[in-house]
Length: 102
Image 1: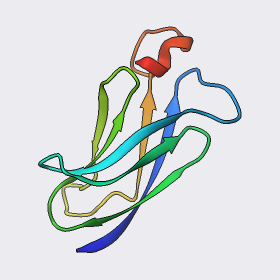
Image 2 (image 1 turned 90 degrees about the vertical axis):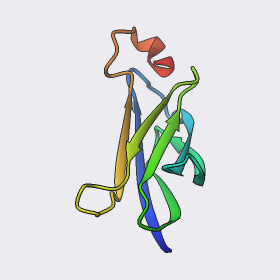
Image 3 (image 1 turned 180 degrees about the vertical axis):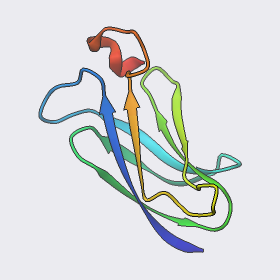
């Protein structure tokens, strides 16, 4: 197993403010086993450290409404992503003040 670093950016449509929002995120394997966990912040990039092997891994962000957003960390050529971005509320037609729950 090798150690990897993952930088995570979080953007929530319509959010303003100095401190930003925090949401839980996990790095999981194909069976759903948690490899690493923490919180991401809209105010700054968050860095995760995790162990990996050749199995597919995913970054999963959990939203306040109970749904989740998932990104595959392994590309088709067996390379690994070093940075991912979650853009919450940009694909919905909800008002800005409701984007956090989208």
